[in-house]
Length: 206
Image (cartoon, rainbow, N blue to C red):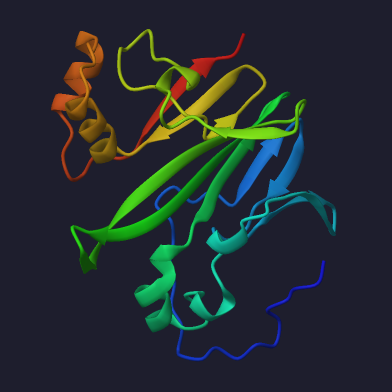
């Protein structure tokens, strides 16, 4: 696959910009897939030394332009990049692609502070239609064991959906809604602090 950025000299010294839930690779049915950087709009299937286009998104006006890529011009990226969406994480099962979209927006109008905004999109491989599930949490995987917010798959295995939870964003969701946490989950949440690692959650597939 041709690299369209090969040989381009950055406008500035460049820099890095990583989405908080960035996951460039995923496995599905013993195959390895690459989503690449968050601003990428193509999924590639990796087979030996081949990189084969597998799926592509038409991001339209929401695709980050080359001139705002962090590696190319970090100052322009910091100033304008938040207008555009990234796709930092994808996974799939037999029927759906689970697509996480994210951008950073100024916090209360302050451009020096950014807060992450997320959109959860499911693409139905049978009907070839996609839809957002943000406004309908019942379309996500309901946590009927621990009683916390619904789970969004970060990985899939043969028998489980696996979710990774940032403690502080998860705790914020709990405080903003009326979840009835199990004593086990409540104990975990009460013990969170600045040293707490992300939490892995498993959901057994039927």
